[in-house]
Image (cartoon, rainbow, N blue to C red; front, side):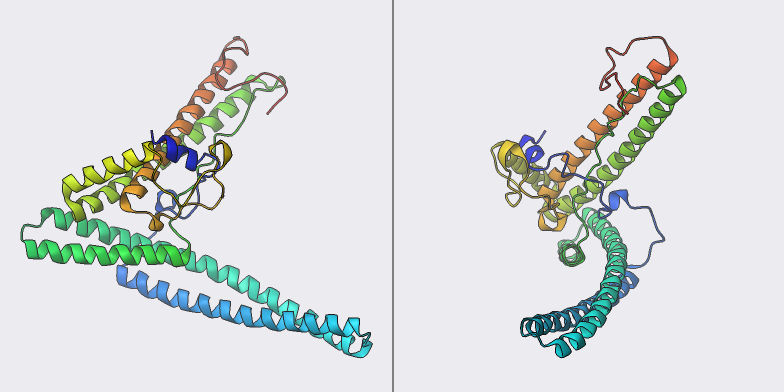
Length: 316
């Protein structure tokens, strides 16, 4: 499925990041207006923090240059005075760095709340469009949906949210010669818990795909949905699609920069999420297979041969 996209998004680049709603715990829902107000205020404050930090950094760099000049000129009195100022300014810069990091996290949280509210509004509008009969009503709803989509993309880009999440690969846990049956059962339980995690991700991805398919169908109709997805699938098979990523030697991505969903068209988003779902399903099946192999080894005499994905030896 999507062989070119698979090369462009290798497993090492697809990691569970907090930025897509599929892996984020449910929180108390806020209204769109409340989320918008909170996000706008936090963004304005975060930008002010960045301006303050930049001013402190500029002063710090200027003092460092003056100190270097004084040292070159062997002006010990000036150099001594500047060393104290550089130190104080450096401490102030560290404080602003801490503030900026904290406010950046608060901005991401506010963005997630707003993106969730916008996503719910997208679904509401898509459903209303599907039920709409009057052309004038349909046109009005589609215009509003387009505006919500644009705001969704803007918030995603300026907050750094809505990345294509990365999947953590199945841990390389192996049988150790010193493992007791209880140790192997513990490893089996761990692998089963990983399989459950991947299952949860699969369900969440399917929800994201369904939401985007509703939006595409609402804006372009059922025929447009099938046409767009079919054309994009053809592009992938013939070497097109997602040209911004590129691939290096061996099909590896040239950059570890994750994809931002907002930078993709809806058909591209759907294709990327379908691939992510496929990868999660593969990881789930592998984790479950290894759990079964560990459990079989713990519960019976057996041998170390013929156990999928496992090696004997002193590895763990």
